Image (cartoon, rainbow, N blue to C red; front, top):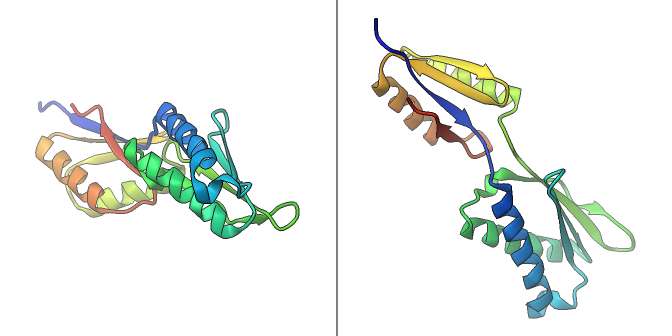
Length: 165
C-alpha cells in the first residue's frame, strides 16, 4: 500500500515583522518633510491586528499607506495580507482608514480553493481543517502540480505551503 503524501495550505503573517514595519513607518512620519507637519498618525493594535491611519485628507492617508506598504514589502510581507476598509470621515475634515491583517484562510476561500483543486481532476483529496487546507495524495508529483496551480491562482490573500511530506 502506497504511503500518503500531503501538504497544508495556510495563510500566515509574521506579526513581529508587521510591528517592525509599523515602527519604521511611524518614525518616518515624524522625519519626512511632506508628512511631518501634516497631522497624519498611524497606530497598530497587535491584539486586534489592525492598523488605523488618521490624516487630514484622503491623499495624505494614501501617502501614509504607501509608506507602510514599502516597509512591509522590505520585510517580505505580502501586501495582499492587509485588507483596507474605505476611508471614513472623522472629526473635522480629517479621514480615518482601518487596515486588517489577514491571518488564516476563511471558510469561503478554503471551499473555493478545495473546489479548484477538485476541478483539476488529479488524484488528490483536499480537506478543510479550520483555517487551513490539507491536500493529500499517493503521488508527490500530483502534489507538486497542485502547488503550481495554486501559486498561479489569486485568492485575495497570500498562501503558503507547509508540512510537505
